[in-house]
Amino acid sequence: MTQKLIDLSIFLENDVISDPPGHQPKIQYINHQDSAGDVAGIFPGLTPEALPDAEGWAIEQVSLNTHNGTHLDAPYHFASTMNQGERAWTIDEVPLEWCYQPGVKLDFRHLPDGHVVSAAEVEAELARIEHQLKPLEIVLVNTRAGSRYGHDDYVSSGCGMGYEATRYLLDRGIRVTGTDGWSWDAPFVHTAQRFMETNDPSIIWEGHKAGRHTGYCHLEKLHNLEALPSTGFTVICFPCKIRAASAGWTRAVAVMNE
Figure 1 (cartoon, rainbow, N blue to C red):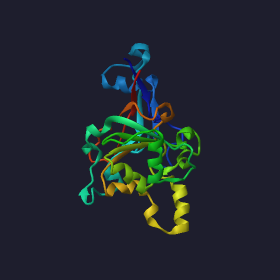
Figure 2 (figure 1 turned 180 degrees about the vertical axis):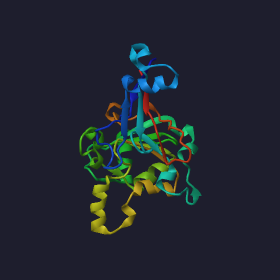
Figure 3 (figure 1 turned 30 degrees about the horizontal axis):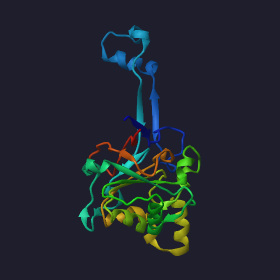
């Protein structure tokens, strides 16, 4: 038996809209010629021309926030408390066992942008794929947003998971979920329109806020979910260990036996 690895992560890159304005990553590329003087300066008497091929090293200067690229959100991102009053865990406190578990994919690509997925829709999709959730499985939500990565409308594309849909998963022992959208919730542009109509603040970030009741993590900005079956794969999504942070970048992958 061999294993197939499926990359579920987007790039960290310039010039592709994967975050709202003002929140994008910035990468400065420093090539071998650019750095030759810096390398030579470390060694008294050395000139850049004396280096092999007159080259230094290639490095990159990166400006990021912890929610750029494919990342795992900690309960602390959602609120200061979890589990109905406990201090919310930061990303360095998330159990690694949560991040290496069998995966389940829910296919919601047919739902319109801004739609808020309900518990009944989650239950119906699980019935369609004939799967009963088991504690600690990692549930991935395939939305239309995945097909819009690289396009200007990515951040506003896809459906989102509502409070009751998230609670449905958490009440069955799920502790890590994921989406190929910019957010686990419906895109803000659609929520803002609903808020103008209802003046109901409970709809804002409602899927995230389910973590106040039950602590959990979710992956955002996944990619390639359409390549996955509904079940029969393992997800690995260990986050970078950033002390006291609300999220950590991850190279999320799915492992399938062939």
